[in-house]
Every structure is written in structure tokens, then in C-alpha cells.
Amino acid sequence: MPQLGETVAEGKIVKWFKSAGDAVKPGDNLFEIETDKTSMEVPATSAGTLSEIRFQVGEVAKVGAVVAVISGAGLPASVPAAAIKPAAAPARAAAPVAISQATPMPRTIPLDPFREVRTPERNFGPAKLPGGAFTTPLARRLASERGIDLSRVTGTGPHGRIVASDVEKAAPAAQAMATGASAAQVKALYAGIAYEEVPLDSMRRTIAKRLIEAKQTIPHFYLTADMDAGRLIAMREEANAAAPNDKDGEPAFKLSLNDFIVKAWAAALQRVPAANAVWAEDRILRFTHSDIGIAVATEGGLITPVIRNSEVKSLTAISAEMRDLADRARVRKLMPNEYLGGASAISNLGMYGVREFSAIINPPHATILAVGATRRAPIEAEDGGVKFISQLTVTLSCDHRVVDGALGAELLAAFKSFVEKPVTALV
Image (tube, rainbow, N blue to C red; front, side):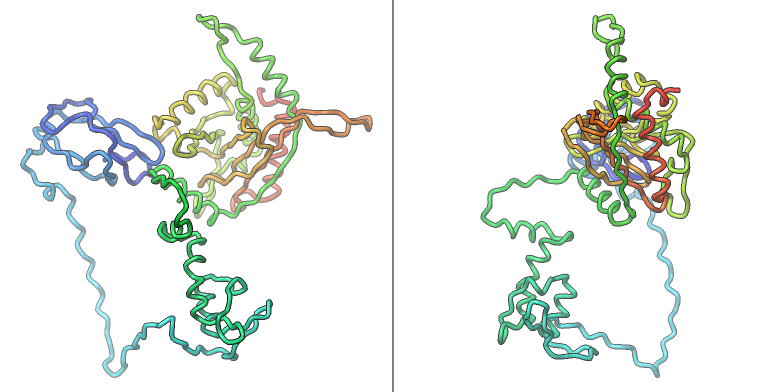
């Protein structure tokens, strides 16, 4: 199983192009693999006979695992699987521990959660909740350990007191609603209700893992700004109207609003270089070029192919590259170097009519720009009257470890200036 990027640890076999016993030569496609981000065909690097297939279609193999054996290429067909597995590292000898026989070892007593155990608290009697109900010490401790809100528990003890058994009855529902609920616990809540189970593929599992990691470990803050996109829209319409025809009589290009936004964001990162950076645990990496990831919706979830050196590319080059990357992303044909890395990202939901939203930062990025739809909005004119503009609302999500409030505001202001005076982003 080949290495397909530093963050890829495994791949799923989705197709074999050869069968056991087939002759292969260098360059012949052997199998197709699917990772969390892409799918690709893996060719043979040696000539010989495909004598053994060790991972079938649908099975997942770790990077570096032997998925097949080609005999006649330095490995005879009779070599057993165990013979080519890497030798296990020798066990590390544990350091001797001196134990004094005069000092008895502490004895651990398993805790029975159903037995009333007194803890060193000053008040061992029933406690009264704000709502008026009383609770026992054991019920309070169990509720604290399991994250259960006692104000939502009905007591069955004397005078409505909440006892341990009441907390035990409330635990399954509380656990099922928690983040770490098991599939069985969640399904138990919907017993008797019709639903369809959709298994998670590797891409959706990775997205879920990374989103939890991002929200739990990145100190997000958000900055929102309105801007007048009238000039930008007019420039786009003028450029598309002036597009020459190709040999088939069709316009040679058709620029989207997002192409202009990418160009403006690239220019803003150049104007505020301190924000053109990512978090690297014990340091910050600041970049020379504006490498921007663009969120693309696929059937399995979002993927962010990267347009590199965006600040030096023309609008038509950005448009053509984005179309190609998006088309291949939707069929999982991107190579790792096309979606890994980048300094920042853009997520645009304007085409769905979304006015504004906040996006989750894609680590190790320190920023992501959420772009909404343009709309006609009234504002005060210079003469005190009212005029309508094509208003665009964007929200910048920042990692406070890299970009503080003032720096984020400076970056957003730079972007606004390029949107409202788009010709300045092109010079």
C-alpha cells in the first residue's frame, strides 16, 4: 500500500485490474484504492506474475502493508506471508523496580456505583436543588460523573427525593444524546421509527474526526463585514461579455464571482503577510505565496483543493484551474499534492442563497473565509438619502493562536478594499 500523503494512514481496495496468475509488467495498473480524500490506480513497478492477492475488494490496508505478491521480481511465489512481514522490534526491557517488603502495596477496591459510599464531604445529607427537589449524596455523585442535569430528573424517593436509581434510569438517554454515544444507544431512541442506515465511508469518517479536532483544539473567533460588490459584479459581466469565442463558437471563458473572490483574498493575504500563516504546534509558518484551498462539495463530503500562487495567476487561469480541480474532486481523482497544504481557505455558499455563515477552520490553516450571497440592500447615500447596493456579507474565522483580533480585522479590511475596488487586486 503506497504512501499518499503524510496524513493518509490507510486505503481501501475498490478494484483489482489483475487476477492471481496474470502476467504483469511495469506500468500495468494492478489495483485501485480509495482514501478519505481521493481514489487512484496503483501500477506495478516490476515485471512478473501476480502470484498472490492478500487484500480483497472492500478491505482496508495500512500504508506499507503487502497487498499482493509478484513472483519473478525478486520474490518467489512460495514465500509465505509471514516471511515478508517486517520483524517486530525487540521488546524493551522493563527497568527493575525495588519493592520494600516492609511496605505493603496499596489495595484497590473496585467501586460499586450502586452502593452508597460516603466521601469526605462536609454535608452528607440530602441537598436541595433550585427547583425544590432533594437529592441524595450518591445521586449527586453519579449525576456529576455521568454529566446528567439533575433538574431534568424526576425523583421517586420519599417526598420526591432523587435517589441513585433515578439517575441510573436517566443515564441511557443522557448518554445517547452526548457526543460519544454509541450507535446502539442512538438507535434505541428511535425504536419503532422508520429510518435508513447510511454506512460511513473513509472520507466521511475523516471529515468527522477533523471537524471535532478543529472545534475542540482551535480557539476560533469570528469577524463579519458587509461590503459593496457592485464594481466587482460589473467587472465580471464586462469581462465575460468581452470573452472571445473558441473554435466551436463558444465563449473561451466564463468567470464566476468566486474567481474574483479568490483573487481578492489572495491579494489580501499578500497585503497582510502576518496572516498568511498556519499553526505548527511549537511555531508559526508564514508563507510567501497565497495558496488558497477552495471548499468543494462532493457526494461524500467537503474537500478543499488548493490553488497555489493565486496572487500571480490571472482570473482566467484561476477559473480554469478551479473548474478542473472541482470536477476531479467530485469523482475522487485528485492527487494528494492537489488538496494538501495551503495557507487559508474559502467556503462559498452564496449560490445556495445563504446570506451569511461561519465556517470551521481546516487545520493547520489559521483562517477560512465564509462567503454568502450578494443581495440588494439599502444604505445611506453621501447626500443623506438612501441608495441600493449589491451587498456581500463575509465572515472570517480565525485561529487566535496565529491571528489575533486586530490582525484579523486588518486582513478583512484589506479584502473589503479589493472587493470594492477590484481593479487594485489585478495590479
